[in-house]
Length: 245
Ligand code: SAM
Image (cartoon, rainbow, N blue to C red; front, side, top):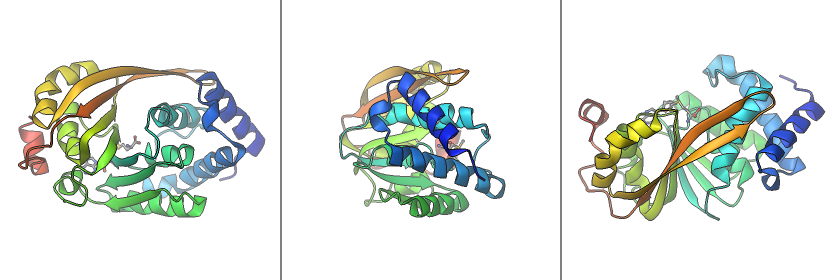
């Protein structure tokens, strides 16, 4: 699907500029976002990748939203993105932050195939996407306690999400959950789960973004891992959901 190049780049530049992300953009990066948008919209019918198909909304809800995460990541961080779906925040963050490496996980093999193929076609070299259940990876010594930052956007409620994500975080690393409006309420119920899994120092930062003709506000929950996750977590998924911590 062809999108008018100049108009796309102007819109992206304007929204990134208004939200303080200009330093992340270059012409080469803008061209990658154009290619990503064209590919995502082309493949959308096949894989059901995004409900958002309007370019202005894609720039705000997908790209600027992921840029708000990208500016918060430490240099050269080793990141795991849990439940990456069609590659969010994985692909925009990988484009904006070539210094980080992202290990992306989703249980849907088709979407993982799309993410890997998109990375290959766009020349994004800092992404590796793997189809597996998050709770299986969290038990695997290859991935457990290994990541500086673990991210997740729109995957599960906070008690469940914490059990899926915190096992991947190294002690001293962070879990960053991009959440919807009722995050504060979810967080109150998840404090015990976070602490049981080794998390402490929970912070909530409001992400507030301006797009072409709408605004986007939602919380980002940041948890620092202070202790290793006990060996009995994560539990099988049915148990995580039936009896959340
Ligand atoms: N993060 C993406 C985004 O923001 O657009 C996708 C969000 S989508 C609503 C949730 C994704 O989480 C789905 O692709 C689903 O397959 C994945 N998911 C949910 N539970 C999972 C689990 N236990 N292990 C792996 N992936 C999971």
